[in-house]
Length: 259
Image 1 (spheres, rainbow, N blue to C red):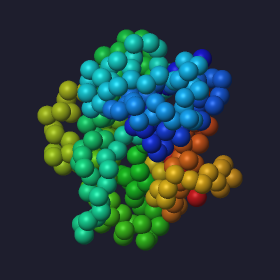
Image 2: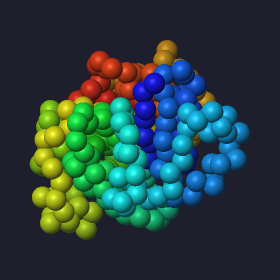
Image 3: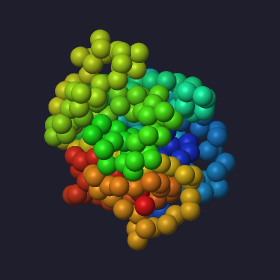
């Protein structure tokens, strides 16, 4: 069996990705959770815990010590979908933890940078509109996003910058570095450059909810996709169906996912 580690999987995209992977005979999963008890009684997950296919590890995605515990055995894929809880104000969405995506990326990359042997593929969930993909969005979203999602996107920008910088292939977006309060400049040299051979940065369109699952026929994917919305279930389905497989065509790319 292949093994996946998931961060930010207590809900949302990584949670549904976990369910998708475990429903096959190919995968086992480890989830890093601040509160494992929150999922301990989840009837969808309990059978996999009882069978040994799913393990919960208590810890925080911004703690090097906690994240390092996930790599005590070989890992094929790391999926990170960590994000803060948004609060909407007159100035758009603000996060309870303004740099949690960036800090979690710093932490994960520090841990991966010290591993020996074959490194896992890293799949990071970001957002449509990041970097140069802003020009592919519908006009209404190009107006709406800078107001409504300015602060969350600064955090995603920090995460993307670090992931691209750690990749051996993806271009580093030097013209899209968030301000020092999101990505302190003294933190950047602490992280290895150009050492991850396989990185996928998934950029969902505007998330409208968890479901329903519309499926492959309705879901479109490309690096220059023009799209308005998508659900978390369909993003999870794209990750579990098209991003984790060996030889995936999306390795070292930044796919936008939407309808």
